Amino acid sequence: MYIHQGAVVVLVNDGTHEFSTKVSPRQGVCDGTWHRITVIRDANVVQLDVDSEIKHVVGPVNPRSADTRKPVFIGGAPDLFLPEHIGTRKPYVGCMKNLTINQSQASFSKAILVSGAVSVGSCPGA
Image 1 (cartoon, rainbow, N blue to C red):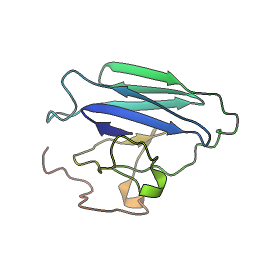
Image 2: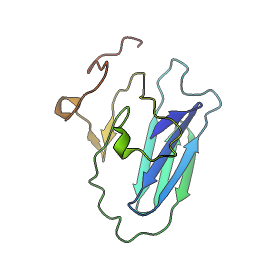
Image 3: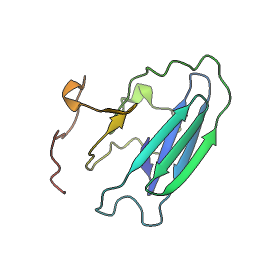
Image 4: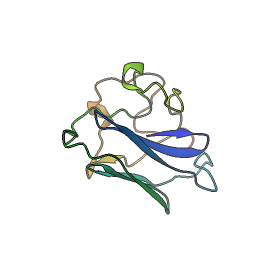
């Protein structure tokens, strides 16, 4: 998931195919307020909710893509994990709170690698 030209974009690579969807809120997401962003993936269907706007995409069926235990990168990813045609390679700059993955609160204290100017547990702009 990334932000590109004011849109929240979700790009899924199931090992064989890539598919994506995006939501472009009228007010944008870089407006100084908190936003609720939810991504739900069920096999080859991905749903993206940004506040009250919802989009979904149905990708190709890939029976070998059942393994969802891939690494999750928050704020950016090493180049070797990014597809060549991704909309931006710039890392996320901003604040996040109440991040959950698979209905579990994400813990940045267990992060394997923290890169850049990261302040865990506080947000200077909030």
